[in-house]
Every structure is written in structure tokens, then in C-alpha cells.
Length: 191
Image (cartoon, rainbow, N blue to C red; front, side, top):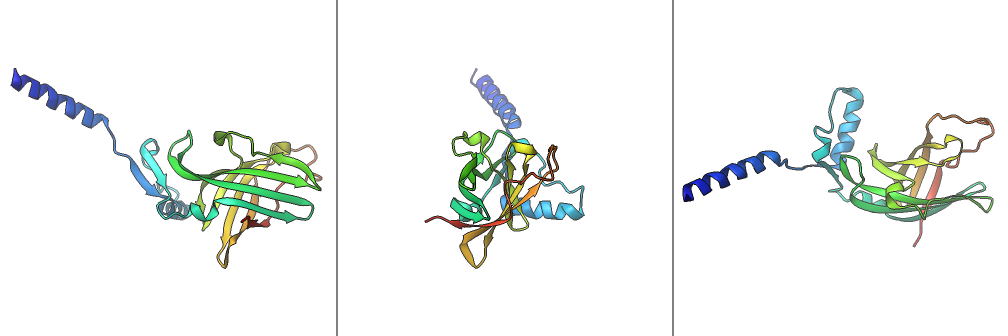
């Protein structure tokens, strides 16, 4: 009887062990390097099993972006709050990422405010590091004003960040006269 219990216990442990997969942790820095290498090697795989992969900020690079940033460009005023989230998102792989809350006013009139959106609908929404900067997805709603925001901390002044916008081509009835929400602008960290 005792021998049978040992065999059953061993069989259960083997079955459970086979069914469990260890989580693969990849640093955001290594993931950035892989994505850069993939430009020249299109078949290179950066994630083997995205369901069991965790992109972790082991170097704490996201920390330098956390905070509230403000700036002006012509008649536009920007307020961008960045928050670091750990293992965040419904998609795979899970990743440490920044989520943002943004407010834009034009000539004093508020045209975008995402401060009240739930975290899972954050605009902008962090994606990954690319060429030393951080990429976030943005959707302004109007005229299919969506694309990627590129954030790069000034190496000489960590309280300044350059925010540039790469728009995706979308449908807009009055494209010639539409003023996209985000220009390239320098934002300053609030104290």
C-alpha cells in the first residue's frame, strides 16, 4: 500500500512538472538590442514563447521617465504624466512598461485629456525601448491622429525629455488643414 502511494505521488509530480513551464525573463535592454539586430536579420526571433515571457526593466531605465512633464509649442500646451507598471497589460508578453496620462490645450482650450481613463486604456501606452528612447502608442481620436510617441531623456539634463511623434497614415477628410496634436517638443519635469 505504501509503495503504491509513493508511485502515485511520483506520477502526479511528473505530470505536474511536465505541465509547468518556467517563465523566461528578458531585460528590456536585451529586447531592444534584439529588435535592433532584427533590422539586418529579419528572421531573428526576439521572443520564443511570448505566453511565458516577461520583459523586465532590470536596469531600471523606465524610472528616469516617471513623473509629470510639461511643455509648450506655439499655441499648444502639454502635460504628460508617466507611471511605471510592473508586468502590465492584457497582451503577451507581460512587460514592465510606462503608461501615460496626457492633457493638451490649444490656445487655452482643452482638446485632449486622458487623465480619467482606466490604466488598461491609457493614452499614451508604453511599448518598448528603441534606439535609446522609449516608444509609446498614441491615439488622439480625431482625423485618425494616431502613431508612436518617441521619448528621449536629454543626456545633459535628466529633467528634460524630447517628445517626437511619428504619425501613421490615416483617413482624414481635411488632411491639408488638420493640425496633428503632437509636434516635436521639449518637456520639462515638474518638481
